[in-house]
Length: 72
Image (cartoon, rainbow, N blue to C red):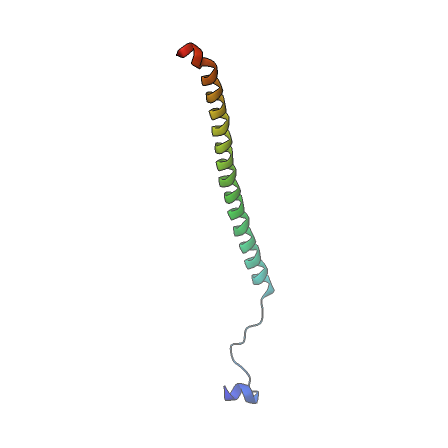
């Protein structure tokens, strides 16, 4: 610590590597894009399932109301 304070050269000082930083940023963005696509697919699947269930339920209720006088 004293040597650094006096101004002695610090060993093993690495220079910033911009290429590696760019690649790591792209890797992070790629992982986020994949995660967003998976999340979008799951949410849209659930929304589509809920929509189809609601449509089927509406159809079943309507059919039951129409057919109930003839069934009972």
